[in-house]
Image (cartoon, rainbow, N blue to C red):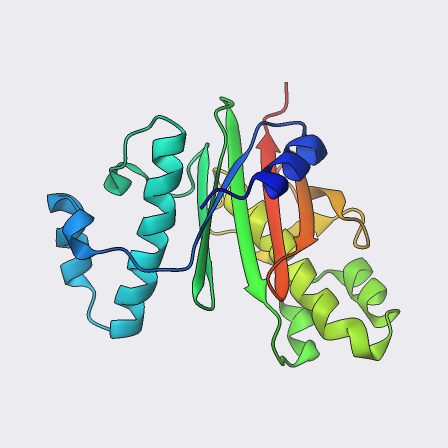
Length: 209
């Protein structure tokens, strides 16, 4: 299902035409092509199979909307125009027709987590900002910052070997912010909003001139 209101907001925030699709239902296996069926049959765990079908459902809808067919095996992440995320029983796919970009999407439902995990992906400035928030809001803000960093990571085409801690959020409080990949000079813009009892972030990587 296309999320038109979200598409409009993200398009305006990131100055990039955007499509966003949500899938709450797994896809019938009969819709898989031969190559997709081969990948599916290699999955052994039932939950992994369900999540994979959920994601393929969103991805096929998005690729069709982008006029890229619906063969999901043609996509290798990170892709410059398409990104996919799972959270709970929902999958989201985001895409753009704009060339020479990297795109990333991440969705995380709110849940009880130990805020001490922040040390694994937040830098000092981000940690200080988080500690300044009301204690009752810290888990939600930690989840929000995670989605921003994860989306930025996914958007960066050459992210092999990198960690989330290498992506620095310039405005931790902002709904729209720049993200800098330490030592890489990457120009990334991210937009984040509340979504389905959680947070969603979409990031765009723009190559330096």
